[in-house]
Length: 324
Ligand SMILES: Cc1cc2nc3c(=O)[nH]c(=O)nc-3n(C[C@H](O)[C@H](O)[C@H](O)COP(=O)(O)OP(=O)(O)OC[C@H]3O[C@@H](n4cnc5c(N)ncnc54)[C@H](O)[C@@H]3O)c2cc1C
Image (cartoon, rainbow, N blue to C red):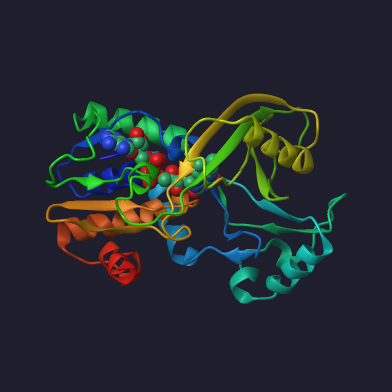
């Protein structure tokens, strides 16, 4: 239940195994429809590789490639990233990190600095890109609808348990289903701008600017922990506007302003597993659904169909025991 990145990837995994299922979604939206779909191998203020990226990235790319072939659509857009340092302090930290083998393997030109006017320094990160999440979700929905295994419906939260796999994203976490959460609202602008560099994703100044082609870009994003709704705000829009001016320039036109809530239990570390007697969960993809959803879906499908349990760190039972 739930047709965001989690539910959609799981549906493909079950379909690949020939397992019967029914994919149900309320069609009220969700964070996967808002996400920029960015996969950035080395992320955050600390310029660290995403956890277990060496395993999850090839898995995700193989998965999207297989779905692309099935749907006849391009979903994955590989693009290098320019990671920009705003201050000398940030730059020195990046340079120090760049010598570590687990970071160096993702850097272009053996980690040679890139000079960009107005920035303390920059490094080019390879191996990442953008998943077109909207196309992935819409085309998959249509594919499963035609096979008769997609249904639009809202499952009530107090619905009796019974072979249901809850892939409901932040909605379920906010309801307190799985204990305390750290869900974070985020806002994104889609803009058009003439003549801006479309050859690389730019990451810096606390945000990112992602080329979509034909002079269009997505930019984000904000983090807000108190006001968890899908409504774009003036303050959020202004924050993203400031990121765009720093990363791209002042001359742009806003095409769309969207907001969503990232499903977070503990950083961006997803969880799967049985809940209660007859139901299952797949949630907590955090800010990295595009990277982790395929690998986690594969683990859950293996568990459901072959009884093969995953590593304890992604097992919801293990997580909830440590919570209590
Ligand atoms: C602003 C923003 C930017 C982001 N950018 C990125 C990015 O660049 N890269 C990245 O990897 N991740 C990004 N993310 C995170 C990403 O969106 C999430 O990791 C991922 O989408 C979570 O997927 P999900 O399937 O768990 O949840 P969702 O996408 O929220 O899907 C849940 C689905 O369940 C359905 N549902 C819920 N309750 C019910 C019910 N009772 N009955 C029926 N259906 C129900 C909803 O309609 C929805 O379709 C971003 C998130 C935000 C908010």
